[in-house]
Length: 168
Image (cartoon, rainbow, N blue to C red):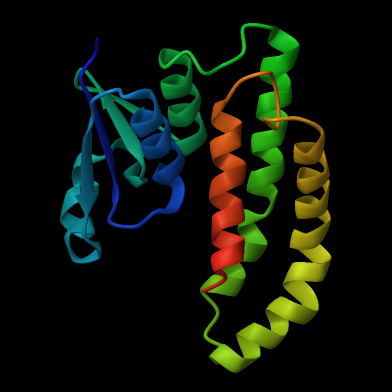
């Protein structure tokens, strides 16, 4: 088995799905977390200057979705049927559609009271609720979102759902 080292900031963020897949699958890996103050120096060693990256036997794999797909495939979590695998990717894309609005909301410099009002009046009803309702309905019909077993996309949706329900 290859030696894996996942490098990301000391936050959940874009590496969390890969961490969940590693943990769920029991695949050993090193979880290297970089503190914000250390990033300018460490950035010099990262091709492309962006995180996360996954080191696979010393070779650097960039991009969070590519990393998650690779690890999921290594863990045997990607459906063998090509159409089912494509449905999994579509589900991940749906979950990632939430990110731009969510991050804009989370990083806003508005007061907590203004954020709460914006969440309740705009973000949730306009962006989050329609997607969450579709996903909830889908889960009422079957055990997993896609396929007949757990897939990496279940982790994507779970992570986004956790972020939304935790709200702040």
